[in-house]
Each structure stands twice: as C-alpha cells, then as structure tokens.
Length: 218
Image (cartoon, rainbow, N blue to C red; front, side, top):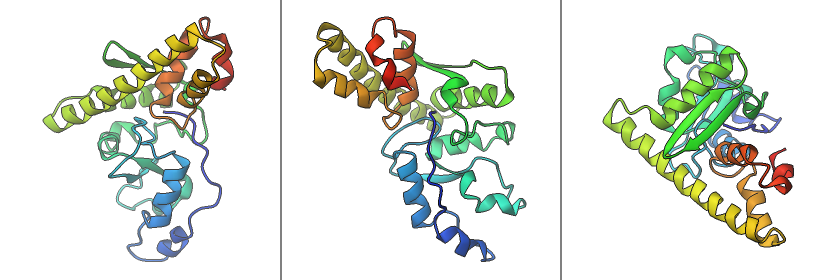
C-alpha cells in the first residue's frame, strides 16, 4: 500500500445515483477515475492491471444503513476481489489506513523476503496494526483453495517484480553513470509501479548501497 493522490472532483454519476432508491456507486466514470488515481492497481496488494476491479468502501456502509458513506467519493477505492473479500471481515471495520490522507510508508514496513511477505506496523496505532494484518493476509492467508491460489498468484507476481528490481540494482551498481538504469529505477520506485511499497522498502533498507536513489523515495 502506498500514498494515493485522489482526484479532487467527484465523478458526476455519484450525485445522480445518490438520488435514486438503489443507486450505483460503481458507474463507468467512477471506475475510470479510481483506476487512474490508483495507477490501475489494487490499493491494498498493489497488483497491477486488474481485469476484474471492484469499488470498495474504506469505511463500511453496512448494507446502506450508513447512507452518507455509500456515495462518498473519499470513501471509494479501487480494489481486487481477493483483497475486497478479505477486508469485509468485521475486524477491519473503520480500522484501515486511508492512503489518500496518510502515507502508509510512514506507518508500515512492507517487505518481501525469501518468497514470503512480512508486514510490520512501525507506529503503535490501531489503523497501522490492522492494515499490516490485512496486507499480510492478502498475500499469505491460504485457508481455502481459492485464497491459496489467489495468494500464490500475488506472491509469484511480486517475486517477478522484485527479481527485476534486484537485477537492475546490480547493473546500476556496476555502472552508476548509466542513464538507462537510473531511468528504470526511477520508474520502479515510483508509487505508480506494481508492488511499489515492497520495492521502495527494499531500497530504503539498503540505501547505503544506493545513496543516489534516495530522491526517488520521496
């Protein structure tokens, strides 16, 4: 999870649909704007290029009992079905970081090590603790066959992404003057890239080896 800059103007369909008895909060303009703002990534696991995106409510509306949350633009997020399903557990209600307001990287350490994800809260706040648990489960909770397959798919994609980062860092270390490698690393460490939090965390932990990359972690 990384910081997201949400478009300040809500999609026009939200006002229209709000007036209806059973209005929709996932009209085309909402999906498109969320996709753009989130760089086509699930805001929780950061899997990129979703073929089956969903619109998720950060603060649950409990079957529209809290009506003001249903069409609140600031409460809508771009998510994959796997993560959305896990976040629906009651224990996460109103306890997840709003990454459009706060920077998750200042609250969490998101690491990939030897084929596994390890998420730790670095501040002792409930939202950090629960968000760390949620992201951990999105990659590691294999209590059903479907979830096992979904977690494996994400771990495999993350491993591929990290492997590209490792190889590029090695090439850059041997040739630090190369604009090509610097450009590749700049994109890899941008918040718009897939699994950016994990890549940024790795470089941050090894910044002594790559001091020139510090500017890309801002």
